Image (cartoon, rainbow, N blue to C red):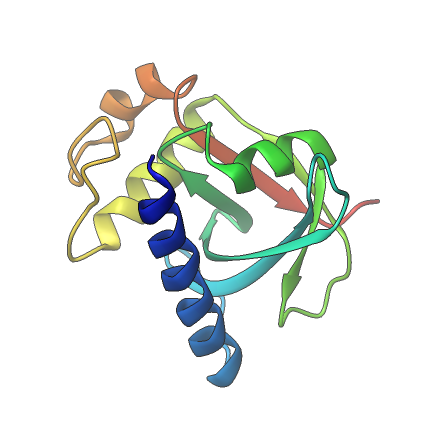
Amino acid sequence: MTAASKAEVRDRNRQVLERIRSQEPQPHREGRYALRVMTVAGRTSGEPRAVPIALMQLDGVQYVCSPDRRRDWVRNLLAAGQCTVEPDEHGLRDALLVEDADGAAAVAGYLGLLPRVSDEWPFTGDAPTEQVLPFMRHVAVFRLRVPA
């Protein structure tokens, strides 16, 4: 990714963060996603990094998904293992990388709700769980839970 395209992504993320924070929070609903702001410590600096996310809820469990494990927020979350999600009532959450059928179902469910799916995903937006499962070591899916 070029420096110019990184700057474009940062600018777009900043705009989405502002929009999410300025609107009434979307409700969490089973089989749907809600836009949220996730904050995770930077893996090198330790400084908080806020990113817009879609928090998918499936079988009462919340997931965040990325088509690429090399994204900064994914690498930060892998290193930190915890994050906060605003404007939710829970504080710190554990973030567990999942590579199983539950994670594949979360990805398939999330993508199936989108009007347009990014070309960055290694499968089509209408791919069933069975077609997503072989790619789980390439994409990133985190199960978020409140620590016990």
